[in-house]
Length: 319
Image 1 (spheres, rainbow, N blue to C red):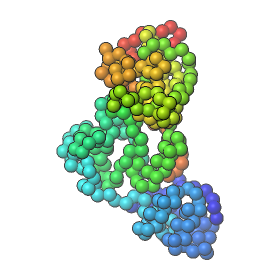
Image 2: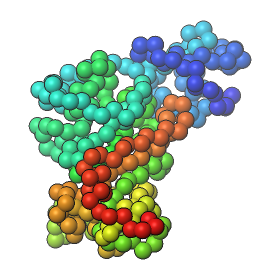
Image 3: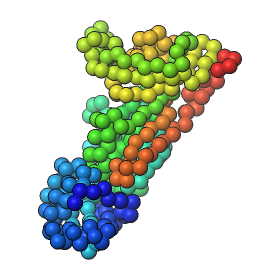
Image 4: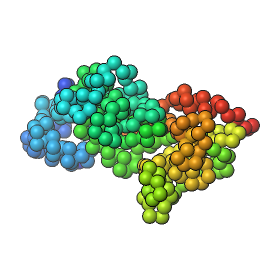
């Protein structure tokens, strides 16, 4: 009975996802056994759900059939007061919340400002995006454990995707491993980039002489960056970049390696006259929704500092 079933009619009922099934499917399930064990076996056979997640759900009594509705306990309440960042989040109760770009029962996408780390690098560190997202959950009465699926460098702005339940995390983590989540960036780089469209395929490793830097290295990890010129200015070029891999400082390392350091990126040879950080912004995020499988596209507008920097340069004719 392997088939793809329509999930669009599923609705949330508290902690449970209620999924109406077609009558022939319900009849077949009852004939073959509709115990939680048989339901788990059937769900595994569909190939639409992570098997480890189904096994975990089954072990806690989270799978059952209620007449013609399959019930999955997908939205279990999480005690937010037990979160490691709870005390920090509550200490900053009146701070402005994160800029929400997208939210539903499965996913949250927020716009990370420049200068804010996604997660703490040491115990007790405050002012992270994870902390702001936890505070958002508390203020909106959502008892969910939000977990980021990918990260951005502290000095890079743009959208960050969070999962709001275990199922979404399983699906989105796998999508990241399969390189099915597309992340597009806008970067202002020094000089005139010659080619209109090209790919940088060079491995990246640690810089032995500088602990916080990375460099192109034969012994490094594979790294692929796709680059396309968007607009030319006098002295700089606006490029759009798509990552195929996600190495630390990948865009900064690759572009500086070919002689086009980011404006403001002093660590990799850029000029810091206009900016104290690199001119790099995540402008678009694309992924398949973990439950429906439908494409989701998130556009993150340029922040004011990026627009001001771009306006400082005079466009070249015919650009």
